[in-house]
Length: 479
Image (cartoon, rainbow, N blue to C red):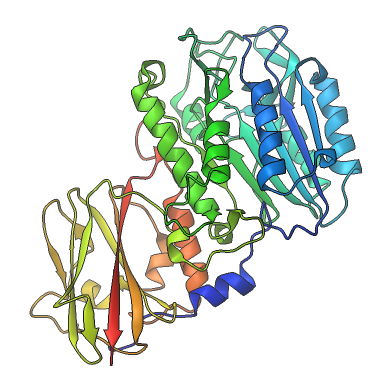
């Protein structure tokens, strides 16, 4: 849409050929194994009513929507899931029972916790844990809990498999003593057996907030977590809420924001976060804690465009990659019209009901991407990309040495206006694309931008999702 052409490396081709993510979207021909763990009938700590139901629902989901057969799924619940039982089953099913290249899925529903770190690899001096049915506490030490170190070592034996980990638990008992759950309403229960007590240092809390929820992702490993670090996950009505959002979002395709028949990773995490945030804000026992409820996907940036369902598909639509509501009421217009002829001068007008920083992208008819704002010319003129409430920003300003002109390719394109209310550090991603020329790799640019916008914001008192809004506008260039 500009005189210097608008968008770079074909987006659809980049995603279809070079960026296929392994987890949950590997071709169905690969052998596959799932291990589903649900623990509610704890022997020594507060019990949960949801995990066994969650395992049943997840098993049905895997069979109905992800192509698993019943004999490819192992379940272990309640009394089977002792600390020793978990160790043996994980070894037998995940390591001994799979081969290189296999698709492996591990699901856990139950309590999560923390225990003192004894090998010095944790900045907050605590290991995150999955809590076995026979877990107990002795003074400040937790016993029979499956630590992230143990799980990481086990997954290290299957690095050549394609692994998806889904954890419907939390690890928010930071710097705590005791194993009793906070008192809550019966219909809403946090999935941590630990209460806050004792002296909490600010440094330790900040260190914990910066951690992954349980286990790190790798190129071959995607990790879904019910809540961010320093948050609770919840069950209500005998069901894990995150599990509900995951299954209904993908299985019922309620997360299909652009209604194109597939649910991408980006769409599913956006859907789960929206549902979790709404539930927490409307439920006093969650809202009053003021900790938030933010599901997390930890995965390589190129995973954002890949489909949960249908299995094996990869999106060719940028709105499957950058997915967000428009709470800030962002608007975007093309002047004089969204239908223009080659050679016509063009202006863009953007407004927002909330303050923030504007990133404006053009995706042309060939799928090439150009970052229109911020750009080098604006920087040289001392113009930043800040936008204020109710203010219409016209780009380029008049007068200005910058002018956009409708140019090849002809056809339909898409403008994306992103306003980040939090001062997100997009770092080299945005800085490298300020020259008003198409990016060298459109798919990589968009997926990395999407991942940056899905990061957990730690700039306030508590972890939460970033506040940003998205508006899109179709335009057409004709000869």
